[in-house]
Image (cartoon, rainbow, N blue to C red; front, top):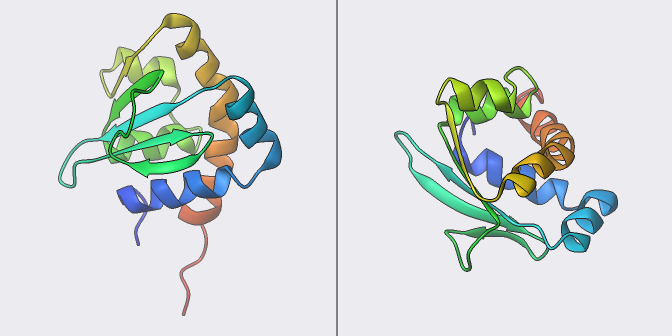
Length: 123
């Protein structure tokens, strides 16, 4: 699996939910994110307190439409959310209050993603 592979994002977000503090924050705020990863391998998945789900089994509070390369950079902290929105590399749909809360979730998602994406390949 390569960095920017949509399946890698899904696995990383599942790993982030294993972090008790992150999972509690998602549950406490009843927060959900739908990621629509566009490009060659269009895919959509939903992250909520119950896990990571294919598609959109229910509406999410925030919908993020993003290309894999931009999501990769955002999760690694190399591209800010505001920069990505202004450059039209990220489209966010949802209430402004929920968009502001996104900053609370990105560090845990980024750590889980970096652990997988930057891990040395197995021999």
